[in-house]
Length: 146
Image (cartoon, rainbow, N blue to C red; front, side, top):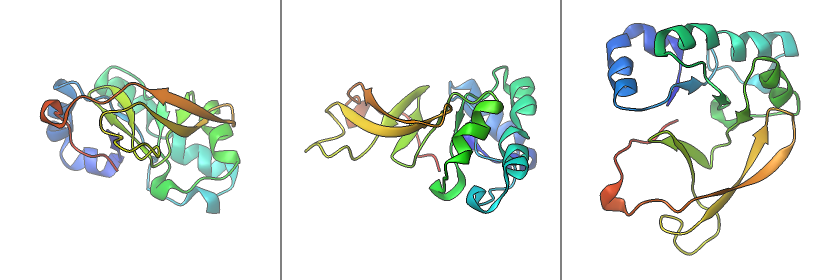
């Protein structure tokens, strides 16, 4: 799940219980700012600002980053890498049960077939990632992430 700190602080027990069920906690900025409008120092504060807290609270430092609104420019993956983020996840992907699932890859049935997506890597390049097939709908135990 991609969590904003203000929601975490409002109800930490709620997010801790979801984490205890196996959900990983990843980065989504400090204040949900449009990163395209910020200089690199402000981007770094937004992206890096919660990583240590999340690492202490949940036992693992986030390694994925989802930019608010899906808004991205060339500097965001570079700044995210400086923060230790390994990949910037675009809006066609979601975390489910600890795995990165991709939707709408142009296949006739993305729920049961392999998928690909473009992921902005923390090195600042775009890569296509093949993903394993998703389980049948009756076996899915997750909620959507934004």
